[in-house]
Every structure is written in C-alpha cells, then in structure tokens.
Image (tube, rainbow, N blue to C red; front, side, top):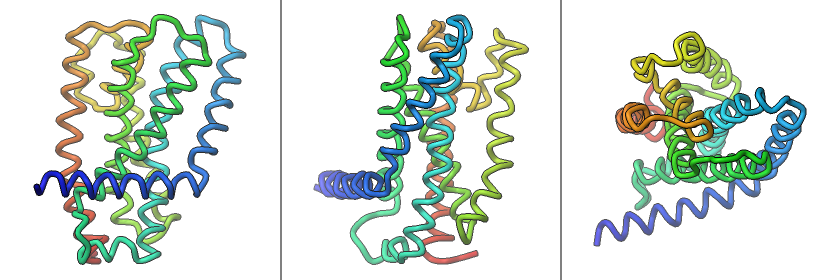
Length: 238
C-alpha cells in the first residue's frame, strides 16, 4: 500500500514538473538547441561528424541537468514551494526522483531527435538511452547539491562553472589514452564512453565498468543530495 501511494505521489509530482517545464519553455528551448546542433553537424565532414555527434549527445544532458535544475529549485524556493514539503505527503526522495525523471525525459527527447535527424547509422539505442539517463542523473544530482548551497541564481552559476571544469576536464584524458579502462573511474569519462560506444561500438567489459561506476556514483550522490536538500532548502540550515 505504501509503495502504491509513493508511486502515485511521484507520478503526480512528475506530471506537475513536466507541465511546469513545458510552460517555462524548456521543451521549446531544447528543440531550438537540437536544431542548432544538427546544423553544426551538417556542416562537418563525415569523419568529424561521427566524433562530434556523441560528444554533443554527451554534453547535452550534462548541461541540461546542471543548468536547469538550479533554476528550477531556486525558483521553487523563492515561491515557497520547497519549504512546504515538510508538511505535505510528498517525501523528499519522491520530490527529487520526479525532478530527475522529468529532466531525463527532455534529455532523451533531444538526444533521440538529434540522432534520428543526423542519419547516424548502427546506433545501439538501448545503450544510448541508458548512457543518457545515467549521465543526466549524475549531473542533475551535482546541480541539486550546488543549488542547495546557493542563495540565488547568480551564485549558482558562479559555483557551477568550477564544478563543470572539474567534472568534464578529465574527458581530455580519453583522447590521450583511449584504451585505458581505468579512466572510467571518473564518472564523466564513464558517461562519455557509454555514449560514444553507442555510436561507434564498445566492449561488454567497458559497458559493465562504465555503467557500474555511474550507477554507484548516482546512488551515493542521491543520498548526499537528499541530505543537503533537506538541511539547506527545506529546513533552511546554512
């Protein structure tokens, strides 16, 4: 019974989040961004486009998760919505799960649109969607943690920049050492490996290691993000 009630609350929160994001123009913005990406890809030679496409797909949920979640949380905090969670049936983890799923939906829609219209061949769509979901969740959880310690949107963006540098810069190592599986201990590299592998092939071992790193990282981050969210946003501790 409790599980059914929890699923019902998550479903209702998810529908509310999707409607909110639609009204705020998130879907329209990402439709435009997707076509900009497609325009860029169409101007590249095929050999470069095959590399650029997975990089774009990797960066899309990364930027989406980090960028939009800060705006969403800080806007809801300003409107007093978050503070009321302590007196509503909706649990903190249910609220956060709804946010994660709703942003994953936008990421998946954008990624599938870009992939279909780019005429990419021999795409492993199952691996692509799993990689995009795990990537989106990872960066959205980082965004939640940053937002909980930010008083306003400008502060969030200032704090987000060094996080992006720290998280994404290790991906340069994969260019220098493409066959070093140990590099997948970096979640950003694990994400890039999975997305790149969906278009260009990847071994089962790489999928297992990269996917495992992301799943463990996301589970650990979810617990940390939940604790920080409750402390700094719901109960107002600083």
